[in-house]
Image (cartoon, rainbow over all chains, first blue to last red; front, side, top):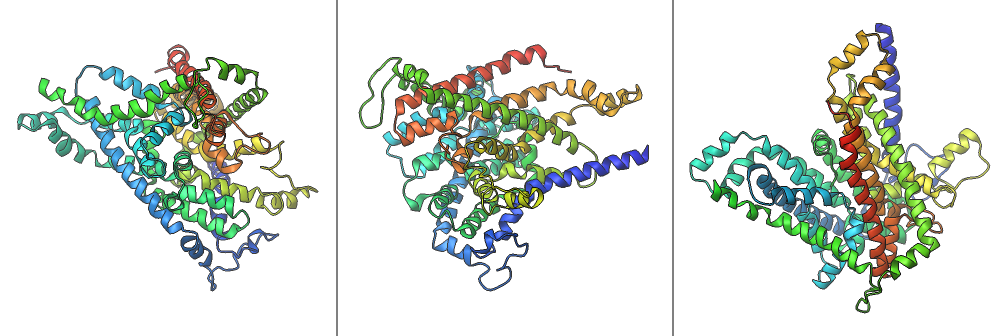
Length: 280
Length: 290
């Protein structure tokens, strides 16, 4: 019986290791190859030790991508857009979640149902009128179309926070109301502080979604100065199809910040997506 | 308390604005625009059903639709089955299991564009790692162009997309599995059921709500494929990887046929609606709640 169990665990471990290689190896190989010279990227048989690793010129491709190809600017653009829209989303979602979880009002069921029903509609369906709206407003080629929709439509976050706010004991709220706090004060001083872990999780997930967004940048951004990282990377790919060591360094720059954030907050990211069961 | 509740609308202002301007009004405008010849340069004119007539007579539309369903079918099947398998594997008390869960989930959080570049490079026909591996093991005489050959492109796209997304479905299954009380499986084992038997007659029936939920979100996710197509193939070679969502983009923002593209968007909306509706109806019928 015990032996059987050991054999079983062994099989599971072997399988887990094999698939982990499939998920991690491509990234690992990408980082490794970004330290190769352009000729060595495609050498056959592939070399395991990159020819520029710990040698002069190791960081050349990164330096070139960041300065000559403007990726430093793209990092700033993406960070600014992702931070503002994620913070905005925290505010919008927590306000709505508070109303849905703790207040009684006319139309509550209907508004919530509409939010749920339209959450699943793919962006491709609504993007044409949205494009028209932003062009009428004269917001094309600005950050606004990348921030405003994501800031206002956060069904996912509303769900997650609603669930959390519903679990807060009523006594906490009643005490504050008896003390004469306005609803805004109850929301801000009682509910927001206890929701910190959920808010942090939501921030990380929203940040990742904004960072990775590609459809809206493709449509709304023309000027090279305003490109986000993903758009910059995509343009770079079509312009420099053969400079693989540069392309790989640029990809590492795009992916690495998220992977670092993910590694330190893995549990929260996974649990956040688990409980609400809805992406972005 | 009355006074207190009256504040609710104040709290809901941003969300309702978003719902109106980025969800409900665009959906309504799309219906309308689908009946016009709007092309961005000149004001739209009402043309009745002509967009739809054109669409249903166009061979290209039908082949795009067929491809969309092929993509949806294989992607959904792959993700739902593999995701469940991974979740079962990861739902064990073993040392380091959290570490493996983290690794399995990693592709989900990465940028599609970077993933596109990564796979473009791994799959490149002459010098890519995959072909060089295949050559060494099977001594192939030719090097298939996984993304450039009409025969393989769609299949390759599906595989890459499964690789990218399956971690997400996996953690939802995992959440479902963790809600199943251990005593039930224990009881089955005492009654003499072996592991496979207890999985199929105890675990799986109890997991149906999760199975169904995953199925629905995966089908909807499979309609929303602009990102992966744009990053890997841009719909080529010869439109063999153009699915409906990418076709909408091409018509609207490459050829500026906004009216026609709105019609296409409505077809996509229609499929989404059917799936969402099925979600509500079928859930009541065969999903097994405890």
